[in-house]
Image (cartoon, rainbow, N blue to C red; front, top):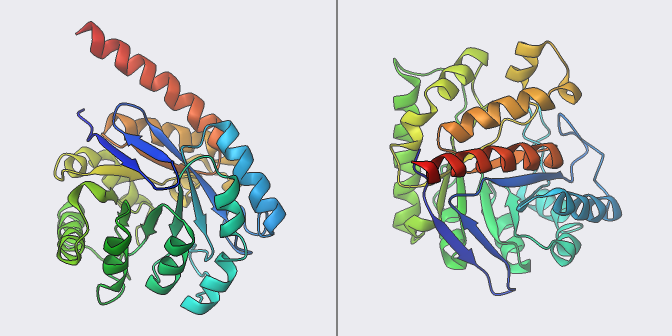
Length: 284
């Protein structure tokens, strides 16, 4: 399946190329309550150490989040989130040899993070949480933006894929109206957010209907999600093999970036998958 090709460069010398190579986004949760690794990295020393380890293991991007978005999570104000994030972000940026994205839906937090040198925006509400302020901040800094599907309930119309398409149409319209460049937009189907097991499965089985419908690169974030636990009957710590299987499914369906906890396993599996895919392509 054809992938979108993009190349991003930043003033600090970092760069990122989207296209033939599958990219791994390593999750750095500096939160006390994330569903899989809450409290493991929420000190400056631990965050810096884990960043270094993930880059060594093959991460192409580090994604920093200061508010857990698991079901029943503690909601933070923008000020609280910013205060927590800025305890870690400056030092993470210093040691990371790869671009750093920030996972937030508060434009105030994002503006502070981008001013500090963060490279990418990761918005779990796809620019639809506020009045367009997040989109305007993103446009002002001219950075890549990840726009994820999300909604308040698990209620969908007759066709869940059509609902997601309408959501992304709106997100892209907001982005472009604010001045975000088309080539800076990356989409994420939001697996595990406002979706039950069956809904997640349907989106994944029909994922190519989304990846073919928009001229954007796609991120897949399924790491240790509950639907994998439902299939395997395991808790979060025992879902990495299941995550790997879904990531390879996503690769076949046209995704490019994979947001994961287990960077080493993901980097290795995707490197082999890429090698086979490219070898087959050259033989055609």
